[in-house]
Length: 469
Image (cartoon, rainbow, N blue to C red; front, side, top):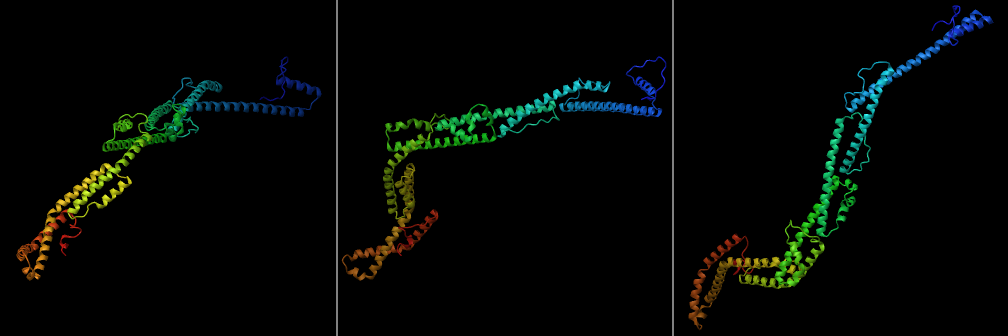
């Protein structure tokens, strides 16, 4: 700023009333008229000059701050633009000027439209990411069995189309998995309904035990019932029902088979069989055959079971008579062969079971026939030894008679029929002489028999060599 000291103006020079020079000239005229001291005049002019400098300095500082703000805004705009390009995965933007030229305001104005366009793109991209990630989180929560209340956060540092495509691919995979799981749930529900229908159960109660919302049917709630836990429980329920159906079917088949055997054994009339005819047809259906509703209800099984029990009780009395008859046959074989009663304990148990009604009558006759066969077989195997035992016993009797005869020979010689006693004595001596060989043969055969059968030979509960001791 120039000095405010007054200078002479050329005559006739016109000054605008608003200029500083005009105001100084008017101040001088006032001072001249007043007679202002020269020193005072210089002091006042110096103060005016300082005040003017302060005003200009403030204006310069203000202008400089505006320039700094513009530089900062421009730098921030450029940085934000660059960050937007990076986050959106784009290398360039056609609307951005290649070279920045002109004043700061012109440069800022030139980048602002491109920046605003990029910001709008980011908002759209963030919304796309939010929608895809929210859907991914929702389906993943359904599959995992979670509530899915967590807040989804978008990573704004990577909003590229490549990343968006990755999320979209993951979403499609989850949708396919969800669809497969929904189909699986429906398959399980159909199986459960079919099993329940055949066995006379309430499918609603079965599904409610797995998860109450499975009763909602094919609606929005059902989409939450696709977790591994739900699928595992459904699979376990199906397997249990399948096993229960198989068990019931097997039980019904066994009951019908037993019922048929009882009919045949007891000569049951066709009229008595008629109520169970359809049940018999269902029970004999192949394992993979279709069964109608209510074919395997507990009531049906209990109905057949009660009839089998009734007929078994009727058969039990007849079986008791037949068992006693066959047991008597075994007793007779053992008595004739002088051997212990085989399977005595088993037959006693069978008798107790017959009395209690807890015996399979179809196997009873076969068991008893087997006992009879074994008794006959053992009796046959003992025959050779039994013959030797009987000869030995006869020889022992002859030996005792011969000893008595020798002691009382004089009495026998004078008695009536002495010649008969003499002949018998001669025959007895012959027989007695054979005893050692007979005993040796008996022991050999007994030992061979015992080794072959791994058991001890008894003759009326006595060892053969102890019979005459």
